[in-house]
Length: 230
Ligand SMILES: [Zn+2]
Image (cartoon, rainbow, N blue to C red; front, side, top):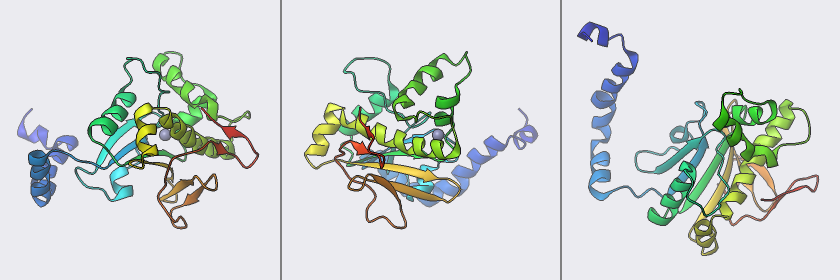
């Protein structure tokens, strides 16, 4: 590629801009993180959706978030086996090696994963179709509607928290008071996180919430009395 052609490569220009403009402002921080290693206190498990930007939402900088993202922010049920579960491996690493102090599960409005869990995915997407099964327990016995989708997106977050509590190392650390679990639901169009409140069994906007989430979690009782449990 000639130099002229390179200047039309927007992604390449952004890489150069990172090193020339952003990096010098934070060089010491990055070098400290290399010298001392990373010690993030937070494992953030979020949907892969491009509109969910964890660093912007939390105001976090380099070294603060250990990130896992996947379609739907789903957590595979713990089965004590050795399957190729990237998300499970990351949870084990974050809890057992990094000793994170909190785990955030962050879903969001207009989630394509939840919609696809209702409406289906292409036949060729074999892995995706299997993955979406992880949302089934949180779906409502209705056709998808904006209200049903929103409720389901929130129920999915709670279901993942309950699955997390089935991970032995997570349960152990939560019960020892060394780890808290945070269920978040990001409303993209409002720019606001809604936080799952274990005491009241509902999601509270961050502007009105008294905390960013806590654990351990008991089964989530819906207002209609339905209990989601794993
Ligand atoms: Zn999503």
